[in-house]
Image (cartoon, rainbow, N blue to C red):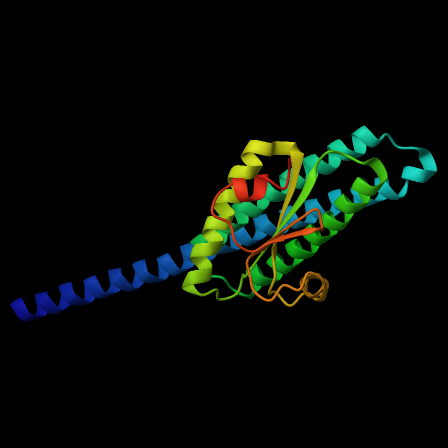
Length: 219
């Protein structure tokens, strides 16, 4: 009787373990799916907003849009894109990076590239005071050295954004996600290793020790 009781207890414990294990997998799947859906919603909203921005810019010569409004909306949109990029990075750090995440990241990189192009055009047409600061980094399997360097770059750039606010348009882009237009940018600026920071399409920074190393180009 005692042996049967022990077997029953063992089977009961095994069943509980099996149920809990599968529940954990299911809960993890639902959480990851929820986060992917959230990112997808952000992408769609940003695509619509960027389309609105580009239509406004293209209509500039036709209906005489106010430059102040155009610049203000461009800065606000760029700030929102940057805020969402920070959240996406947290989601990716918390989850297994799968094909869906990588695909959404590519869509976001294309959006941010369009934002960059739009920002350049707005600067040409309205001559605003902001600076374009584009941060290109390695997304896929960075080395430990790259991870440390990119974490430092990211922290310094976040500090810069907190300090400068609307004075800069900060655009982070993955430089290794097989997007041809970003590859063309890397070729144009002769970028052979990541990370790198581009300021106002003129200055290339590959090494920094402090915030001052970037700020000196903005004053």
